[in-house]
Image (tube, rainbow, N blue to C red):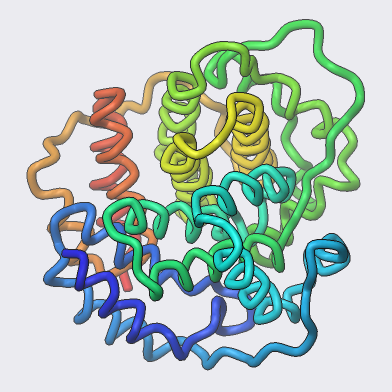
Length: 342
C-alpha cells in the first residue's frame, strides 16, 4: 500500500497542478482516495488513463522567502517558486510543524481553486502519517503551493449576527446570489462575484464554532451532502466540493492548535456557504425524498464511473458515514457514481 502511493507520485512527477486552462489535477488526491478505500491495485491503471489529459510542469523563476511570501499569494505563475519554498521549509522543520504554521497562514484563502489546495494537502498528509518519504514530502509541498498560488479569500463583514448556530440551523440565512450574476466560468469565478454581493459578507459569522469542532464538521458535511442531492445536475460538481473541502479539513485537525481549528472551521463553512449562495437553486431541506442504499458496492461503482469527483466524493462520504451514520452519505455516493462519468 505504501509503495503504491510512491509509485503514483513518481508517475505524476512530470505534471503540473492544472490542465485545460484551470482544471485542477486530481490525480494525487484520487490515488490516496483509492488506497483509503482498499483499491490500491487500481491506482496505476486509473492514473495512466487520467494523465493523458495533464500538462507538463513549469520551472522555478524567483525565490520566495519568509519575509516576502505575502507578495506571492494568489500568483499562480509563482506555483513552482512556492513548491521550492516549502521544500526549503521541510529542511528546517518537521513537516508537521510546517503544516501547522501554513494551514494557519493560508486558512483565510481556503477557497483557493475551489478548495483543491486544501484537498491536495490533506490527502497527502494521510499518506505521510503512514510513511514519510521524499516523494510524499514533495507532494505536500505541491499541495501547499497550490493553496498559496491560488489563494482566494471571500468577503467578511465586520458586523456579527445576533445569534449563531450549527450549519443546519443557519443555512437558511445564507443569501442567494442573483441568478443573473451566476452565469459561466469555473466555481472560483462564481465565488469571485460574491465580492460585489454585500449580503453574503456576514455569512462567515453565522456558524457557532464554540463547541466540538469534529461534531460541527459532521453537521456541515451532512447539510451539504443533502444540498448536493437536492440541486440540479449542473450544480453537482460544485456541491461535491462543498462536501469534500470541509471533509478534508478533518484530516488536518490533529496538527492544528484549538484556535486554528476553529478558524479553519469558519473558513470551511464560509466556502461551503459561498458555493450554496452561487450555485443552489433549491433551498436546504432535511428530507431528500430518496431511498436508503447499502454501502457494500459503492467503491466498485465509483471506480467503474472512472470519474475523479465520484471517486473522491465516495471516499469522503464513506469516511463521514463512519463518524455520523446518516444514510444520506450513502445515497449521495451512489448518486454521484451514476451521474458523473469519465
